[in-house]
Length: 621
Image 1 (cartoon, helix red, strand yellow):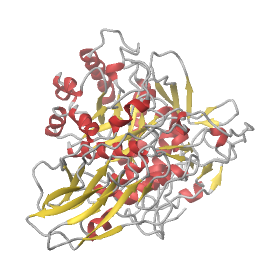
Image 2 (cartoon, one colour):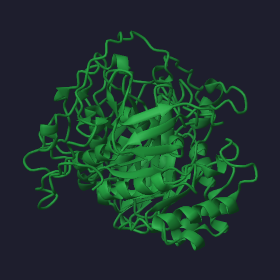
Image 3 (cartoon, one colour):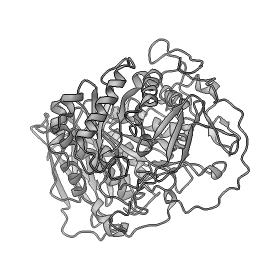
Image 4 (spheres, helix red, strand yellow):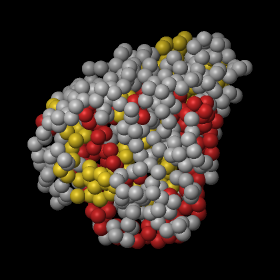
């Protein structure tokens, strides 16, 4: 028994079942005291930067009416089947308690809402990875840690010079973290990747304990264990000798997996790797015999990729100078071009190919760029392009208070009594992609290869027929001169009598908060979101000209238009009505800075993963 816990077993079907809730875990339920730290009135943290960049000048000569000819049957070149949960989140281990919750019975309602938004659109829970740079020098302990104020913590961190430009702290974490993840799954059906320490592969007894505990506690919600994070950087960061390369990496990997064999895990194929990013390529690792040597263990091939870095390795980069690089289809094409050879190799091996960690730029991103509407457009275009390339999943990284690219950020501890969370612009990407791919788990994506790099588009097919079209306008132009019309026609068939359109809109690519998806928003400023969308849903009904066999869809500059080609496609992408929508309201405050949390008594009866009764409303890399 890994920990003394009280578990309500799952009973019956997913639609009528009790929820497994872990409580009474040693060292966790100590009384909470109140901190007397003063509330901050302002912050210099990058997560709340006030920097607004200037939007690039509109390009000239753009096409006003863009023909979009769709095949009425599945065309050659479509992707593998994709899920609505294609976009998920990667949470740095060092901040997992700030994001997930204080402990397994003190969960963060905003986080649950952010995840529930995606579940409602994708039809099943989102995917979250916990790991990152801080996983490799981590260790698990059976009880929580007492901080300087007498509070019990799941995460204990300290800093030492480890040569890492991301200034990642060393981490101890309590097994309570795994129970916290399990309870989140009970509420919103989340699936997980979890990172194992690989800093000392020949002294791996703690990592063995972590692997066994993670599988036991998360069960089928555990997708894979990530073994090592960016091993190609180990030598450069001083964590291995300068001569360290793929052969030495394979020697360590083999030793670790031999030890893991002795743990009697229920699943042998449970490892994600090789998780390289920079100085080695995934193809080089595969060509060296990675799957031949370790294939019995590998269930997912994972990569880490950022299109730029703010680490200062090549001098200071002014985000204004590179803003335009993100506002073109070339950015997404460059992303996928890195894997033109590797993606087919992975698919031919019968494995999913996952971008385990990405965002606009490593080392926290760029203020003004990574938190802009332009970043949301980049995120959507990149997600579609990667899906079309047969990646199975892409996870947006979530860092700390000094990070610009966060999809969502909790307030600093000493502001948590009076402030809410902050929604980053890139979070909207996850909503759009979830609705575009829908709930069928059979969406196949194809790049329409439209003529302008500023006006990309994609078609989504399900079961042999086109169901949705996504059209992007990267141009920032309030005059209307850069708006365009997507003129949809069917090759070999007749267009429907109407289409339905939902828009992701903002006045400018530089905007941070004045952003709406289908008429709803996630907060008008920093510290204004509880993770729930506000406002009325707006779906635009556009009649088609069946005589001309065209449907003309306006696409403003800047915006994304998601076009539903049938009422069923719209229904399959839409969340439930407000009366039954899954949301989480604050039910208890901890007393420690007055964090809003979920009452354990409420937690046991919640319906996130099928509890009985009606639904309740309620930096590093």
